[in-house]
Image (tube, rainbow, N blue to C red; front, side, top):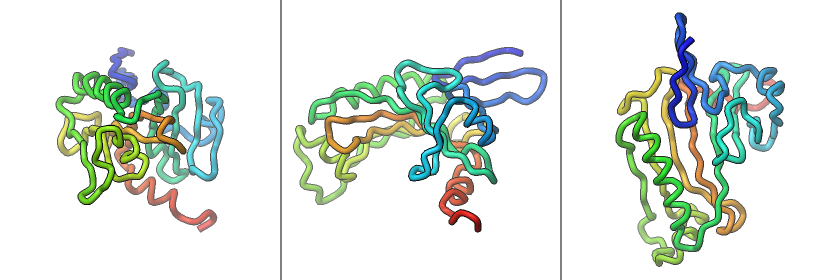
Length: 193
């Protein structure tokens, strides 16, 4: 079996088909396998959360796994917590470094740097406030229809977000499975349908 390492993504290639495994988590993992991996199911998120994925990356303190019993793993998201001033310089620098790394594997990203028209949060020192208010978006993405992604992936998304305050800043990388849309729609269905 040959190993080829892409940023945060382990691709195991052998005589059979390659397996995509963000943070070492197979996109074909079952609920039992996620539980055995020392993760915790959080009902309010409808997701599994772990701080000890099989293939950790020290930049990411938490990994969130959206999983549908019907479709399997929908997405694997690594969350990097950092501090940044109100201008968001630290968050932008961290995301830009990850984007550069991922561009080596997937080619040029589709950038996202948008402020809603009419937003009052236009000042340089209001950058993170705009993110927190969901009036500003900053990130990058790679999509299967535009980029050379492994066939098991629909998209790879980089994003800046905030927690309860603008002092709690996250940069995330999300690997979306090919059936992401169906999978997430399945998670929105009421239990016991």
